[in-house]
Image 1: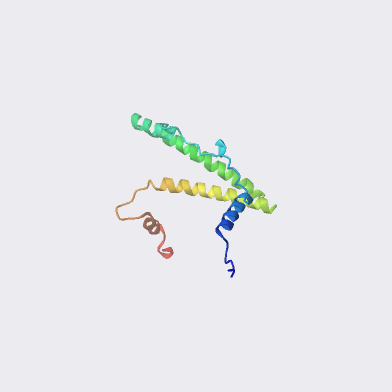
Image 2 (image 1 turned 60 degrees about the horizontal axis):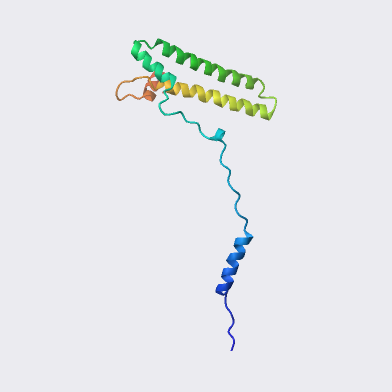
Length: 145
């Protein structure tokens, strides 16, 4: 009496595995990222010039040069972002691409201004328990609160 074979025999499984190894292509080697794409880091011990200037201000007892330098940097960047956004706005209606270019420049301009405002407004002091948003509400006329 012969018995019907149900399922693969061990030898068949080994052959199937060998066939799949041969049939599947080996993965392509991954090329390393070019150095230009890697994030550059400052060498240890490098102190940004602004921090050196802040220390110098403490040593000399005058913050005028540091404040003037920071103000000039902020002004130059606000002007640059404004010029770009203003120029793009003049041509925004000419095409979809020009409109997108304006929106991109506008968003950059607004985010820069907002970021500067957020940084400089953190230095404001208020009485203990008062929060700046409450102070802003107090400045509004009664009808707008």
